Image 1 (cartoon, rainbow over the protein chains, first blue to last red):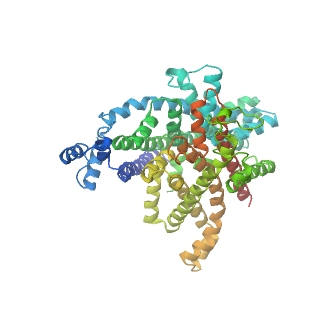
Image 2: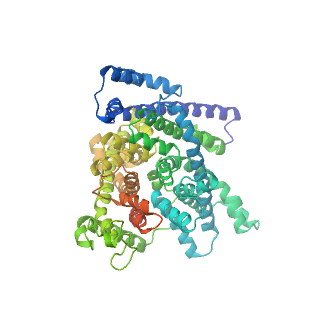
Image 3: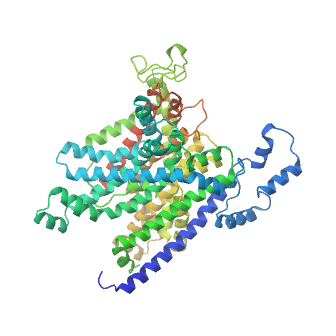
Length: 325
Length: 282
């Protein structure tokens, strides 16, 4: 609004960002704490599991040495602060299974998951926008109701089921894409499509209701009065004005996307963070579980922070209303 | 924010109202599910574990409407018997998330201040994990059994319920007649029971129905990954996982159990939306 001078606006933004940053850091500490706590609540002693695989006699000295090496000796609060301190430096210890540094394992698995999630996000946004725009443009009642059902359907389908259907049809029936462990773009298509459906549903729904509301705006009337075609009104005028809330919501679906990655990576046999945490859970590989959980949590916090900050640039009204808080 | 929060979200006024036919169909589907839970033995054409090697991997046909698995067990019967575990786990998880989440949301919304900020920070932390990951963590702490699966899925959704119920409580607290009641000296307990709860009840119910669908998706995914009940028992997620080995030559094995989940979730979502619409009308 005009009564906020330019300098004020920057000040308000930095106050907002500072506050938001503070809460993000507290939540991040909470996330790391939960990762630590969950792992230490899991029944079963990893040292016993590692040594007693064959039920053989365990040398107490050897056990103590291993316990020390795995940083599992000492009181719990000391372990906790040691964990916090090293986690802050990006060090999550070494894997019980492979002996590799956890950070390195995560760094190796992350690109596969990120490219999958990114592709799914992109695909979901495209499909969702397509559905919403088409439902505005069509004159057919039948098509319109079909398009109204699609988003709900997309959000209701279990990921493993969609994956199974896609595999059956495209890999086994048509033989177009490799069923398991495909690399490159061709291997990415089916998993990304599987994961994109919930995002597509969300985007379609929010965008469709935004477009419906925009129909009553005066700028739409103006554009129509100037003789713009229907598709031009929807694509050039309405879409641009309603796209903003979709960005926020797309950011919030990243969480369910990362959750779905666990299922999708397993069924398609792709490497990635989801596969990593599943195998770590099965093997009681504490450092890996902690590391992956902390990294996934931190990713979500970072994304919601970025979305919030980005939003103050995209929609300056956020700043002007923040004055009243 | 999880999928549940996204489902609950309605931008602007509700659009196209759900047609009654759809709601009735959805209700019938849920009733059929309930019938399967109550009396699977009467509805299933065969015992779920009757092994018949000569009838292994039959495609859907007259004798076996949904086909048979690699041991010749009738898939329809297995799906009907699996409904008990699947639906009960989903329902129990939803009830748990609803009760715990409502309690947290009411306390945070009513008392505000320090309690509110602490509780909401905890909720923020829980929402920072993907729900499925949170449930995976919970189940590795608890161990795997149907009850523990339900608890794990319930716990992973508590935060969403708490956040949304708190929002509703704040909305109701801002209403003029609640302020009037406070001014008239109604004590917090009376305010809670007579003013806030009746107003929050409707949204909570709609959320619970939507949450049932989300809980079904989540619990069946966990079963699919092998973190659910142990093998002699078989819920829909496990049936779908078992069909994975024969994906190339027996499409029906993982298709139908997954379809059962999908149809149930869809029905729950439709009904949840209808409840929301009714609330919007009042």
